[in-house]
Length: 272
Length: 349
Ligand SMILES: Cc1cc2nc3c(=O)[nH]c(=O)nc-3n(C[C@H](O)[C@H](O)[C@H](O)COP(=O)(O)OP(=O)(O)OC[C@H]3O[C@@H](n4cnc5c(N)ncnc54)[C@H](O)[C@@H]3O)c2cc1C
Ligand SMILES: Cc1cc2nc3c(=O)[nH]c(=O)nc-3n(C[C@H](O)[C@H](O)[C@H](O)COP(=O)(O)OP(=O)(O)OC[C@H]3O[C@@H](n4cnc5c(N)ncnc54)[C@H](O)[C@@H]3O)c2cc1C
Image (cartoon, rainbow over all chains, first blue to last red; front, side, top):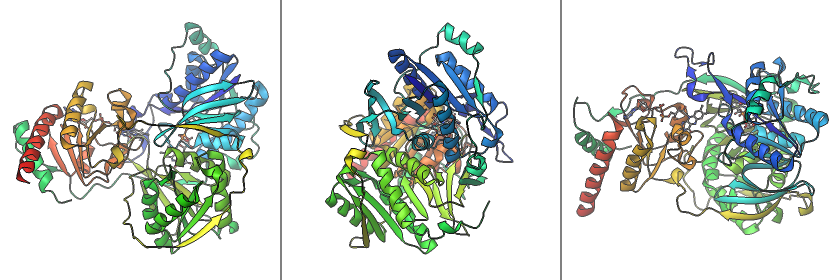
């Protein structure tokens, strides 16, 4: 079974800083990681491969340096890595991103075998829209299974798959036919430690690098800013309220008990 | 970036809310969206419509009435047994079909698992823009939808437009918008539409639904009192202090995102942009700095109390009351003070 996992390289959010004057994000020197949600997808794919045989291909769309994340995925045990990178992709929103990824998936299918399962994470930690998975499913005409907490059963011969999907108030048990797109829920599994073999292989592996043209994209108006219906017009800091929080303990050295009593008093006398 | 809207989009008018049904009942986020949609429709001078899809005619009719009473002028309904349980394929077909037929200029959905699953498919099918998890919706001077959401990392917001495509789509999480006042007896027009699909055409089948046991799962979004901890607590053990205060107040407890990542609390107790949005009467945040992703999840609270060692922490910009000091010392004192206050009041009443 050939399985493709889409992973995104993201800034390690804990370490992002905003420029105090220009209100822009200071990316320089910010370390990058594989989007943490995507590791659940990757691990699930590796488990299926270990069970049924086959290969796991990881795919990312990003700048050349996104190759780092692909190598990390190889070190966890993925078999092949594809980097889709081209300046035409700059400024892609989720519609343009899912277009580019779906074209790369088509090409991957032609070159390395059609994948019955494509995985994505639930969402990323930077854009955080959870829209790319459904976008890919629609464009590749894959049956869409989002927020999957558990894969219950896979029958490659019959082409069937059953999953538990997180819904409001409970788990929906769904049966569908492959090819499917699965967005994996966090906590569904625990990422393995790659073997030494994997680590050595990852360092030496050849990452497949495709431009837009390599991926068979002819219509560049569907890519990048031009292919993005959403337009970010304004970035701004939230307005502070006229007054800051009223400080209950203004006296230095007052005890925790006195402060607590003053706070309770203030809460009950406050008129919102 | 603003061009003349292409000719074929000029017929797109009105504001729609795709209503979410959950086991026969309307999800409250749908009413919150109708409240917000009403303001957008009034500003644009157009109608507000609800879309109700389901398998049971009576449930759909009841939901339509609720939609009218929460502000809708029109309700589009599709009733078909195929729609009994949510499935991506038939729901996507149903909603895109309605959009293509009746052409709304704005389409809003709840940012629930169902809403996000559906919105992504519908936007891709229609090849239009979709702004996720908005915290503010407005109409700009030129009549476009201005959808504001937090940006990653720092303390910033961004406003996103879909200028040259229709409909302009956005999702909003539960509890971000206020619940509108219900107007009993308010009615409107119903437009019923057919699904036009056969069950045999739909590949995905629902085998079962395993309902969550009520015990243990946090009911944060609709709690009246919430006490939360942040990294300022410094250890998992100190989360006990937060839980004890919540227990005395009869409220729920939660925390900032790093606490989930550290395993101090479960993911269903995370408060903020990527966790739960809350609108309690009282919110107490202990050792939380107040990053924008946290702030947008709590801004709807009536009274926000900050306990923080840093008088200049960002949370001071939006909290109402504050104690500057060590949460580890203040939390137990606060639990005692509330316990005393509540028992005195109980005696008095
Ligand atoms: C602050 C901010 C806000 C934004 N808001 C919006 C918005 O409201 N609407 C909009 O259309 N766009 C928005 N964008 C643009 C959007 O983030 C990008 O298009 C991004 O490339 C993909 O979206 P995401 O990060 O939200 O991914 P998600 O949809 O959250 O990702 C889901 C999964 O898809 C896969 N995936 C996502 N991106 C890639 C990739 N590049 N390569 C491989 N796999 C991938 C991963 O498996 C991931 O787990 C925003 C960007 C920023 C920085
Ligand atoms: C895409 C994205 C989504 C996010 N979503 C969320 C979300 O949903 N929810 C969320 O909370 N965060 C979210 N975050 C993270 C957010 O940006 C902040 O990093 C996080 O909220 C900080 O958590 P904190 O306040 O607990 O920790 P810190 O920012 O480290 O703050 C700790 C605070 O405790 C104070 N303190 C220290 N010692 C004490 C003491 N003894 N007593 C009292 N106070 C003390 C400090 O002064 C400080 O203000 C998200 C980030 C990204 C990039």
